[in-house]
Amino acid sequence: MVQFASDTGVATRAARLIILDRDGVINHDSEQFIKSPDEWRPIPGSLEAIARLNRAGYRVVVATNQSGVARGLLDFATLNAIHDKMHRALALAGGRIDAVFYCPHTADARCDCRKPKPGMLVEIGKRFSADLAGVPCIGDGLRDLQAAEAVGAQPMLVLTGKGEKTLRDDGFPKSTVIFPDLAFAASALLTAG
Image (cartoon, rainbow, N blue to C red; front, top):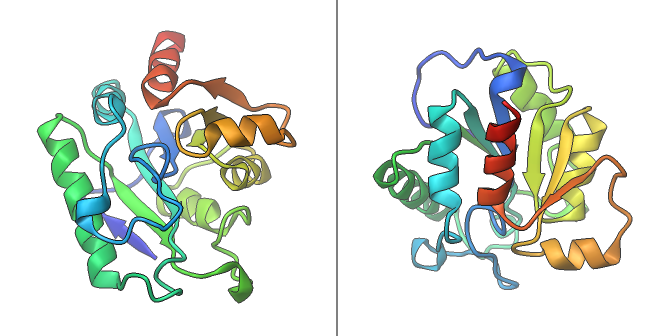
């Protein structure tokens, strides 16, 4: 499933595309899932980091597992309302997300879009006419990093959300770059040019 922020052209150069997980990277995560707009709270500095990336020419795309839909914890209208709140908050910070791709399935569904499978990222590459090789892919969980590695993207771990646990558990791709949070990751990408 995908939600585009606008219907403007989506073609982009791979060097200016960045893929972010949602929960634990942009907003605070919850063991009980984010089930309503009221529960969606941005991590300090994350919205400003996205705005800085936008100003530097990055197209920011979200790839998020949202099994709470299949579990009956929220419906598509509520998921859309959560994303609307995120888009509005970003606009107030001077930023935007160009598209939100999400998998509404549980692991039992054995779909191709649920991370760590690469289907959602492959679809992002197709929709944005982008070669994902080396594209920064930022997440807080092992699944995010494995999906990035599967498509040749650059896995980046942030220590917000489940990130510290992911770091402790180890087993993530050897090419993973680690940052305290999205703001640090954005600064590093922007400094690198």
